[in-house]
Amino acid sequence: MKKLSVLILTSSILLFTSCLDLIQYNEIIKDTLHSTIRISMPADAASENAEAGIDKNKYIQNPDFKKYGIEVDFKEVKTEKEYQMIIKIKAPEKVLTQYQSDLEMPLVPFIDKAGQYIYVFNNENSAAEISSDDWSGVMAQAMMAPYKYRILFGGAKKPVKCTLISENSAEKLNIPVTELGSNKYTDFPLLQLFSGINIVIYSFDNNVNVKEATFLLEKLKKEREAEIERMKADEEKNRTDDSEEDDSAQDDSDEDDSAQDDSEEDDI
Image (cartoon, rainbow, N blue to C red; front, side, top):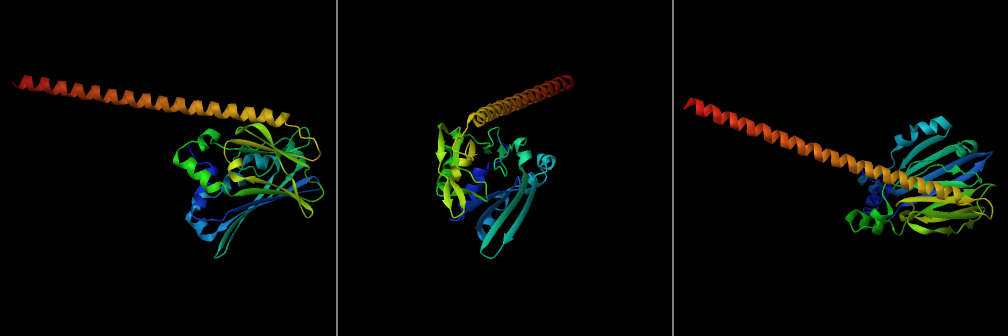
């Protein structure tokens, strides 16, 4: 792939620190989703990995966000000991029935026909790549294993059930929804969300409908497979073009040598 995945970038942060905290708080107020994401780590880890953060422009200048009226604000808080990135999002629920994120780290969900919140983690790396024996995959697994992504819901509207469907598992996974005071939250291992394609479904009643999410999962897998085949074809074409250029250069060199030989015979 042309760029590193969020998974590998995050694992590079963990190489320099034993502490990474990623938490998201959602509250639905007057049919509008208000969401705050906080990513925190020690200050020295942030300075060592300046390129490993979220590309803010990808979100702030996202044409789909502007099209659907989704507001995104980034704030960085730096102290001597700690670095925090705080992302605040405001999105009317009515537009979340239309917008679907294609980003590795979705800031907002979309709302399916059953009224469920659907978070799509569309990672470039496949599950097979992360579980492979290459160094980056092994490093990512080792570094990210202890860390979690916690998603909380507050306010009057909170989920009752949560289900994860993933290309990493043939079975859907029921994720516990835990009460914390007046809030409810779910915990996900970072490795679980940032390897392959993963879809988190929050249902606001006792029934979880996975039909639409399953269709989307299969669609994204096919799109990624097609992109991989396209990239392979481009690489093969580039190799062929390079080989033809080398052959042409060799032919030109042979012709020059032959011309030189003819010139030397004429001189004799």
